[in-house]
Length: 444
Image 1 (tube, rainbow, N blue to C red):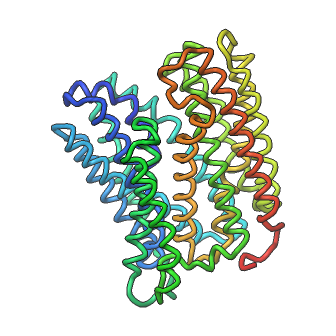
Image 2: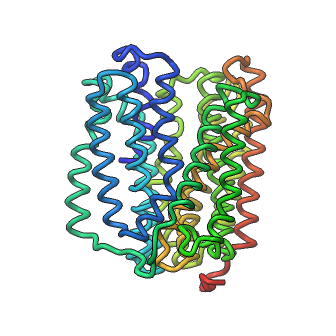
Image 3: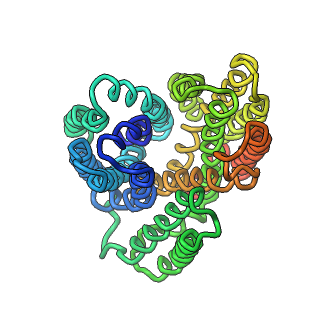
């Protein structure tokens, strides 16, 4: 539900904009309101699950997400819809780390990688089919069904969770909650998310963007100072002294940054330079979607058998080759000659990477801290994607892509692909240096 709603709304925006009589800025916040609360609360969602019960927080997130979905489907105007989407993001911030924390807390090592592989496959599939589901519902009935579709899924999930998932939590957590640390981390991440989201539209010199990024950076710099002084910190800083945990999250940041910026710019290049429709561009990415669906469970089994380091070195390296091949996506190139080979190679590398990189972050800590580990990893992935989408086009000279001609866009696109390939290679290097061999201790 959470991954589906990150993409399903996109195709409904023009129709709901006309129906509710709202402008472009309001439509942006129908998307960005969800991303803001989801991105800023992921860490807190994981921490609360460890303390109060992962299944409990997951069920609360499910309830909140479903109520917000109904409110969005019934929204009479733009502000009501934006408010519902913001609340949806809060619910999703409980669901996403909660689902991974449940896997981390209940599955033994060896089985955990396989379970995360299935999790990655399903989340990738629902993210990918969002535009198609949204387009069909909008054309067949109404944009409101884009939100109402969550209700039957929520009822099924509620029954499955209550029947099959036992409660699990970190029984060692005692004392008062770390309210100051939670507020500082949430506000800091939220300010950075707003800055990254708004920077393409407002420009990096905008006082608003400068203020948002400065406040976010200062708050996150203050966060470890606060945590050192708190008797029961929400995020034990000793986790970052575990090389496997820090390495897995550093690799996550650069790999997910490369993933997000590459898909964003490839779709833009296909539409603006090669003349693809939005639907055609979505279909062009099917190799990635199909391989993630079919291959992520296999990647999880490989990680369980061989350890995390091998797939996390080989996977990003293969994905980097695919990104380098994407420089051949230029005007006049056929799908078979240009996009398909690069997307196929990129998809193979990505499939080898997604499940093991998540499993490496969770396996680096003991089961009682799986919630905070999944919250950190999800927040890092979200920030990495937002950072790369904001920074890489600027570095490549295509920050104002909507005003560029096809030739200028293509040159900037090619530079961006090389930057993305370099990010992926750096992810492989980080993994080689920090992810221990099979059987290494998680407390090293």
